[in-house]
Length: 156
Image (cartoon, rainbow, N blue to C red; front, side):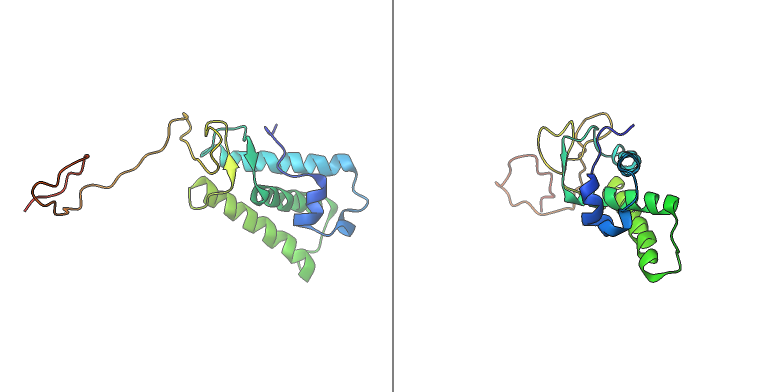
């Protein structure tokens, strides 16, 4: 079960598909598709963020709507060869690609996770410790008498 649902039924037609295409689908089925799409999103986010998320932007809501619409249309049936219907598949594929980019730190959505202390986009390692990286010395010149901090440059 998802820790949160990342979009509303109204956002399905805002971000995913025209409202007319959803007519006749029961509200419980719309909500089930949103919950399932949110579970998919959590699967990608948990490698980088501490769940549950405290807040997220429309970027995550948009991804959720696109995944949920795809699930709804596959269940209902659509013609993958028809031009409008190919967009459903393309939008789903784009959403999954974006989630992969988020999970591998190639993209940074507007997210506040449970460990970030209220800072949007703050990534943490699965254990909750901040992720820190550094480069080795590049051999920069430090003139005599100019030392300070922890700079480890090369002297001439």
